[in-house]
Length: 500
Image 1: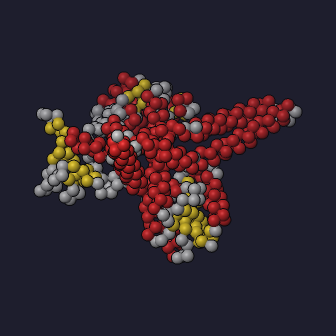
Image 2: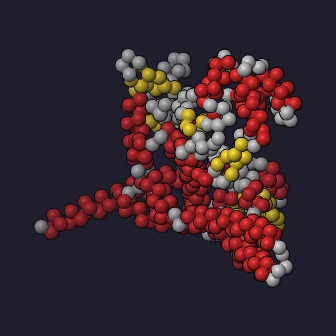
Image 3: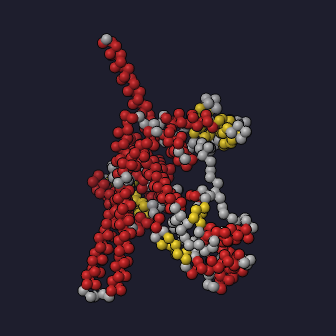
């Protein structure tokens, strides 16, 4: 028998409370162990842990497997169960490998005992992190659309309002506290000091700290506006009821000496995506950036005393694009890469499928309850008022379940789109970097060169020293395939000439 331990993990409390995911991971690992002759010596993880550094659960596993030399294997359902953050997962895996432990992925049978297995594991971790970023981008895009449409959909509702609905259907109503806040604005316009307003509010039953009152009096939400960092300093007309007119709100800001008026967010310029990513080859000092305003020319420079390397941003950007072309995948290898990516995404869709199964089960249960309720009402066992209230409650829960199922089906049906997105990223890295936003540029840079890239002043070009291993292997395969194809073409050409 091969001694092993099983590691399971979910990243959120929501996943833990709703079951399915943890038990499914455990069942997969146990089945794999039975079928392949593994002796399970312990279970670790089993709850949510998604910090950027290994937490107590990982350390507990380390303590056991390091002390027990007979334990050689760590079983996980999929590799990203260590973490969907590539840096954290790689650190955990590398620590285990140093101690002679082998990570085995139960869903595919891939393990880290071979170079090919390590490549596949690292590719899966990189794609898992990309998938996380992609989901975040979709969430941010949806949230931004709501805000631009005048709908505030943040998790915390402003004091004085009751929140109803979700997403674009969100709306607010003023509650009793809101009517008191309306009075607070009037008292401020009448010249009352904040401490006096706090006393008057407390006498009416609304107690708060002076910092909270200050925040309320400077929050344009109460004047029917929405302010959010996603709006990049713009104020948008919201759909919430106003507690004070915008004109009176501005008068309150004047009363507060203008020091706490509407905040305007300064957007970071995308002109220097390589700032702090480029390192001087002599001392690895990160490059800074500046602009010569008279000529409107951008530069990167090393501020280390005695070095002062100074290079135009245009040159460094062009050289960086040339470097990224080395990592582009050739057309001939695209079908193979597409197949690999598809299999990886399908394997990582287990959580969505488990959630869909759970929601279907809940739907069936509520439909049964709804049917029983109607039967009891028809038999005269319950009053009409109770029936109406119960029926409404059950129907609302069924509507929520239907929305959840629709979201699951949408996620599971986007396979081709996700594959296309990943393939496009792998095949045209130079153009992707050139046309991307600052955030996307930096994500791509950190993916390819996690610890930065060197600028060699003598060679007037870049030097790499710590590439992403998975993408680097893909690049070398592409170059090798291209060179082989050119050799075959030359041989065929020579053969034709000799025949002629």
